[in-house]
Every structure is written in C-alpha cells, then in structure tokens.
Length: 308
Image (cartoon, rainbow, N blue to C red; front, side):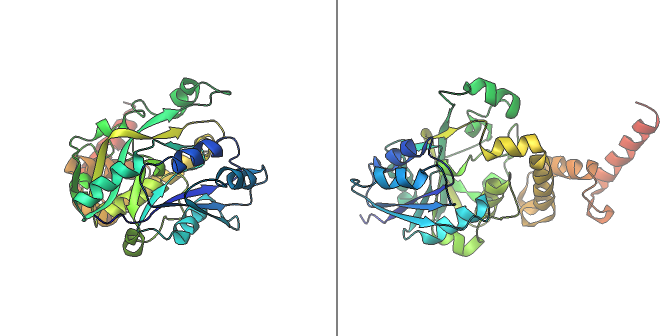
C-alpha cells in the first residue's frame, strides 16, 4: 500500500507557552511519512527559537516560514499553501495530537478515497498553571462541549457530507459538532475545490469551511479521542466572546447558511430554526421568509403589542 505524505501544519503567533508540547506530539506520530510546516506571525516571545530547538534532532522534515501578520485566518491559509503533502493535518500551537492520530485518520481515507475530510473525538485541556478548566469552560461554552460528536443524531465511520448537512441535530446544543481544526484532517485537493478559509470570519471560520466540504465530499469519523484542544483565557475564542464579535459572526454565518447552497440540504426543523433566528434579528428580507416564518413574525408582534 502507498503511504502518501501528510503535512502537519502549525500556524503560530506568540505560542511559546505550549508549542513544545504541540511539536512533540507531532514528532511522535506513528505514521510516516510526515512533514511539519510552521507559519509564524512575527512572534516576539521566542516561539521560533523553541521550534528550531525542538525539531533539531527530529526524524521528520520541519519547514518554518515567516508570515507577515495579516490576521489569524490568513495565517491558516498561508500555512496550507506551504504544505507539500497530499493530506493536511492541522495542529494549533496550544493543542496536541495522540501518537496514532494521523495513522488512524489515514486508515479511514485509504478505505474510502471519496472521503475529503476526517474528524475525531477530542479531549479538552485546561491551563494547568493558570485557570482550572471548569472556570473557563462553564461561563464561555455551552454544555456538552466535551463530547460534541454525540450531538449528531447519526454518525458512522464514513458517510456522505450531504447526510451530515441533513442531520436534524446539525446545530443542536453546540454549533460546531465537527470540532476545531486540530481534530480534522483534509485532502489537499479539497482547498482547490472549495477554496480556503474565509478570512472575514473570526468565530465561525472553521464550521463554515466544514459545511463547504460537506457539500462536495464524503466525511470520515474516528470514534476515538485523538487530539487535545486547549481552552484558556488568552485564546482568540475567549476574546471574541468577551468583545461581542462572536455574536456578530454567528449572525452572519447563519444568514449565509440560510441563503446559500447549504440550505437545500438542511433538515426542515433546522432550516426553520435558522430562518426564525435570522428573522428575529432582522437579517432576512421579506422575500426570503417562508410563509411559516411570516406567521411566526406576526404572532410575535401580536404578543409584543399585547404585552405577553
């Protein structure tokens, strides 16, 4: 069997605190061949020096690129462009991979070449020397974030992406039931077909991309926690929630879902939930509303007028 090159891509920016753990988890992968591709956004905390030291004696290729700081998502896309592998495995600077992560994900795509994206369970990691995990997770994230894969009504080792778009629990409890990029692996040609991550998003950037992939490819799932996603108070997710940018991002995301190509494949209950949300926030024109939603709006206005 052929063993194609997998690029583990690591976008960084002032990640000295956890970067060594991330890189060590990449180097310890049981799958070969792999390369590590780092794209650094002008770190000022010694991140690059730590990376250079960590990979000095590694048995895998590591290429480090200096990226002009233009934003977090731009760095993701730049990192993808530098990768030489047929498959791309994300690893963010705060996160880790289990040693068999790449090997088990590659097992799925080798069984079914139509799979363009594979995701896995992941564990949540806290700030061991700063804030306990519960302190950060409870006020910031919805219940059930630890086991988001259980929010799907049905999930197999592989399925069509369209079947996931039609899942009645697509946005149930937690909006992103796939997970963060560190628990996802993609075929390189996916980016040629669906484009790159949308740099205009700050919070919904990954799930918006996952939905575009689902429109075109089968999706694989490994029912095992093969990655660790670190939750801490200095990450961009936390800042977006505090500033209110996350709320604006989700509003625009759901408007895109309802008015774009994804809508045709949504379960009717999900479609109406999104339509009602967009309508209540004034994001839809009257011509974009269904009859049911117009009735809902009328009843809502009547209740408000009657003080109910």
